[in-house]
Length: 138
Image 1 (cartoon, rainbow, N blue to C red):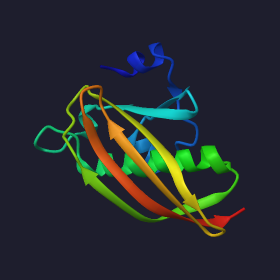
Image 2 (image 1 turned 90 degrees about the horizontal axis):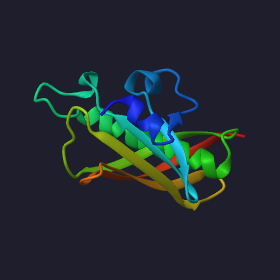
Image 3 (image 1 turned 90 degrees about the vertical axis):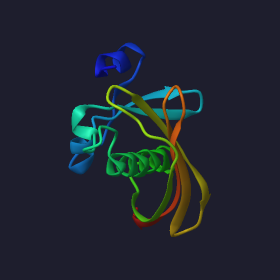
């Protein structure tokens, strides 16, 4: 697969992809039902020496898709940062795979947000994660 596949499927390049997110992407997104679906086409730069997607790419994508999902729900004008992210590697992905991801808030207090996310291909789940994000500015 390539990035044109995602564009043809109605995805657009994600907003807010500066710094490390830009290096680890490019990430794509499209509104689907009541949530945003994000995606990444696995390129050679995403692979580890064994030829499968590097675990750091999956961790980064999970953090990114949950971060974006939180902003989608509470607004991207509020600043927040990851305090904790617990993940489970479920399967490997390989060159050319499209990894999809979605996240959601599970609970919110005045100062912290609890959220979860999942990554998957069309064939299998790849990673799941839960975490806590600190609200640091309004």
